[in-house]
Length: 168
Image (cartoon, rainbow, N blue to C red; front, side, top):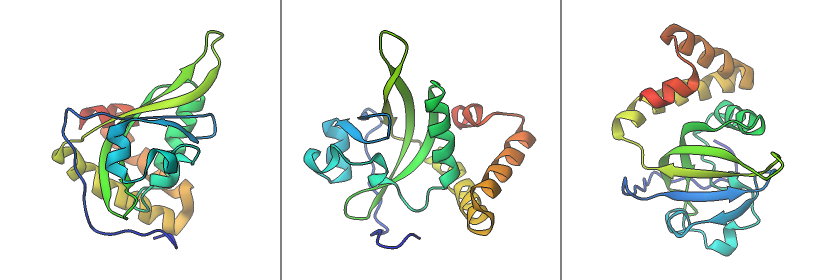
């Protein structure tokens, strides 16, 4: 666990009909957060706007997943992932995130937006142990080790990461 990050074992959940929405600039700094997102994370809108989105990053998340998301977004691709985030009080919540680049009229990426939905328990039961394996690989061999591990797992399943996320 990273130092100076308060974490408690308190899970927050939200309705399957609730959407958590945020927008960022090209560097991942929050430019917009809807009320659902603000209320769940426990920060005020003022505390969120202008801050890096990784403010809500939970230390249980493998770095590789964020590298993958960031790489795909910067290529202009839409991407989905399951993410464990951290609330202001140190509690956590899981999301099924769908992130996309925001494109201007000239085709340039101007920022990113993410819509998050509540994941199913079944999906978390599958993804949480996988993420734990990736974290352990990262602790031993860095992000390269978790990339190698996830590539091996997905190859055995015969799917890409996106196909895997959609399948669970």
